Image (cartoon, rainbow, N blue to C red; front, side, top):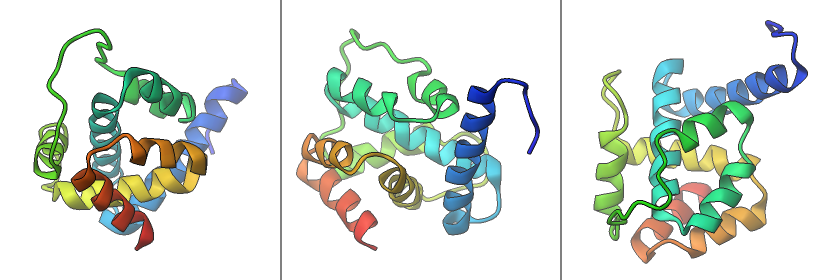
Length: 145
């Protein structure tokens, strides 16, 4: 592992790579695709959650992922939250980037499974509880798989 000379960055880089490796195991061996999938899912979740819960979730992410999570966030801005699973998946698809084509439902499932393995179980339950039924059901199905 490359060393940055700062333990906090080295640890965050190592943890981020573990998350990406887990996503790549499901989506294929393209690290860039895994990064875009995880970022798109994290930002879609962030924008759908109440501000306080979004901040609590962000605090549990590795430092590097936290930067991607908070990128371009405007917590005071009025935006229409995704109410249905289709709207939520459309937001993910918009943010996937120009890399390899990827099904947003696959990106959601792989990324949320990884998130659920590494974030406090109670926090995952709070996130699930704050989501509309269709989105929550898809995420519960993903982590049960």
